[in-house]
Image 1 (cartoon, rainbow, N blue to C red):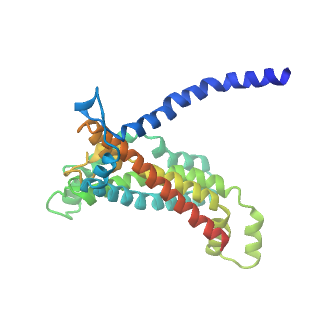
Image 2: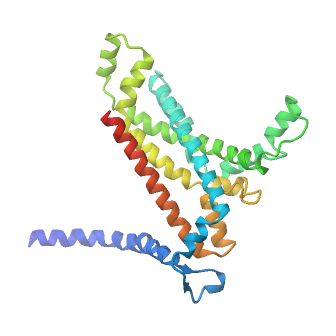
Image 3: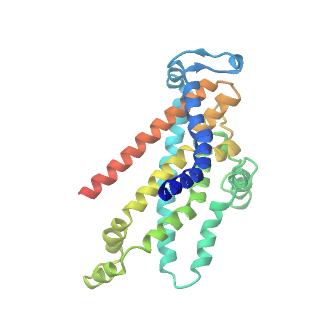
Length: 293
């Protein structure tokens, strides 16, 4: 009877959280999946027509989709390794310094807790046609006689967003890698020093293999984060010109709330999920193959 009573108490404690999970996570996913098979727009709010896979066909045949997919892949391909490399360098630096470690951690982590909206507006001011960077280039060092329209072209606008994304993510990677570095046995470094190994050999043959799990975790999480970029693009470029700087989420937002194509956006969200699952699978396979070699 006591075990049954304990189980009932446990289930009663879990039930509210489980119901919230069903209501706000599971139900929206299945509702979104159902929407992707219907013609669901401003003109069919009350009555929807079942169209099967037509929304998915519309997405895959849309030239803008392929443009924003390339933009998202480029953003992820640049910001993910940059964040990881700079975060690892910062972690190694902080681990080696004898004092002020807490102060440096705070300085590196401040961009992480800074609001995306505020950071995006600051970067927009810097890269604006009449902004700080153009003032520096034209008035201070006289590098150019005309203001450069950084945010009005595809790759310069995306590059500004990539710079912001990298700057914002260094602190998070620093914390993750710093925790991983502290788990590496000091004996390994002492033995390596006795064998005459230098700093580079210790880094590549001891440090990196010892934190492989953390590297994989950071890689997967940052890849998901790269595909979820939204605020910086929305605030800095707004997708201009002609959606050339849009990414997957800003394009999905535009199709849902500006164009009213909710079925299109629902199918796009599942296409994004499939792409992310595929990329995560590749990353796990690559890490496993490296471990087996």
